[in-house]
Image 1 (tube, rainbow, N blue to C red):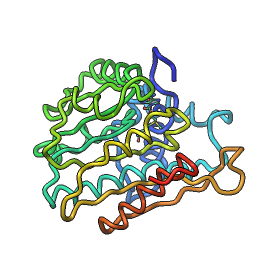
Image 2 (cartoon, rainbow, N blue to C red; image 1 turned 90 degrees about the vertical axis):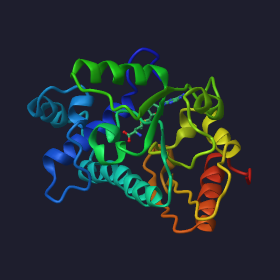
Image 3 (cartoon, rainbow, N blue to C red; image 1 turned 90 degrees about the horizontal axis):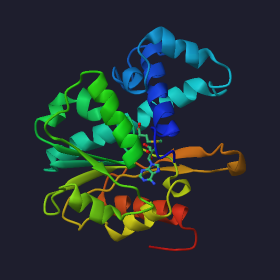
Image 4 (cartoon, helix red, strand yellow; image 1 turned 120 degrees about the vertical axis):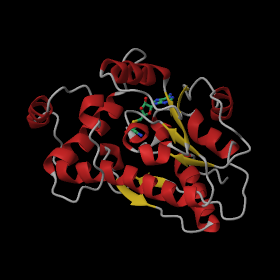
Length: 246
Ligand SMILES: C[S@@+](CC[C@H](N)C(=O)[O-])C[C@H]1O[C@@H](n2cnc3c(N)ncnc32)[C@H](O)[C@@H]1O
């Protein structure tokens, strides 16, 4: 993790979402009009020029564009359901350059949104947003946490999260264990108290086949019930900490 600039993966993820918006047919999975700007590109041409660079575009570029739109769309659809059930806080772990809070004023009227990210990435994003002259929504809270230095529970408390109100967590972040040893264990420790109707939704990337080359397949766990949700969380944690059953 570069301690001065934005995370490279956060920039790339935003670039994939911008590319999906520019290159894929309607209907879009996720129409992220902020992605290009947040990723640091002033014009479509500038972005397309970078995307055309063979060293950048992976072979499975169309699939990657779909993937990075889909995972955020999935979280947002689930959040919608959660809000109907009374959830009033959305906590985005490793938020990167996700533009949810800027793109979804419909949610921002009622939901407190907490963007958790490494301080360096978050600082860069905030500067970029200010430079673009975009106003930060009143219900958006930036919570800088370095998972390798601080626990999630402490960071969220310092960031003003209300422990007595229901929260929806998203973790649109491939393989957090490769960035931080603290994060998954900490998530296990701070599993929210369970209440009737509560759900846990985790999207897990599973390396199958040639994991060494980083070409893992992803699998999606849609959690329709509390029990299935708990199973998905358990699987997630097992995947992160082999041999250790939570
Ligand atoms: C793949 S990016 C997240 C993409 C984002 N969720 C999205 O959908 O656009 C991974 C994120 O993890 C954050 N990260 C990496 N190491 C971290 C650490 N030690 N503590 C907190 N965040 C970290 C990076 O700053 C980056 O924003």
